[in-house]
Length: 142
Image 1 (cartoon, rainbow, N blue to C red):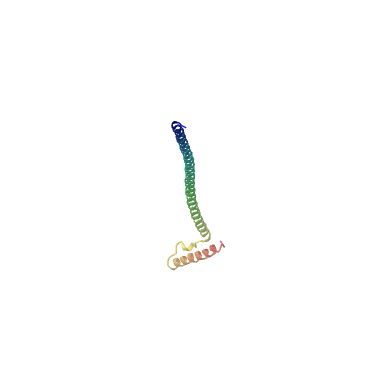
Image 2: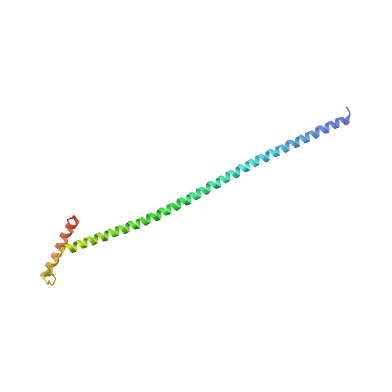
């Protein structure tokens, strides 16, 4: 074999090694690129899921706050209504008691023009009648 042939063979082997190395390098780059694309896609999906989850949590928190405020307003309104009803009941009870007193107590005629001891006796009569009325009314006998 001639030297030229050996050089040709060596050059062919070297060229083959360079081409094989380049092909292997290109393949590795392609594989790395594919892996990066997969990682990027996974990261995008994870970020999207996190965003959607965060949005849902924020919306749920807003809705819960809205419901809490509505409930607070409802409770405040109910408290006002209850207070008004209690006040009306107290007024009605006072009016009923006053009406019952007016039906119960008959001022003696002689007390219209009473003076001195007669005036004092009329006052005592009123006090005794009021005490008796209170006792009867409070026990439900009137």
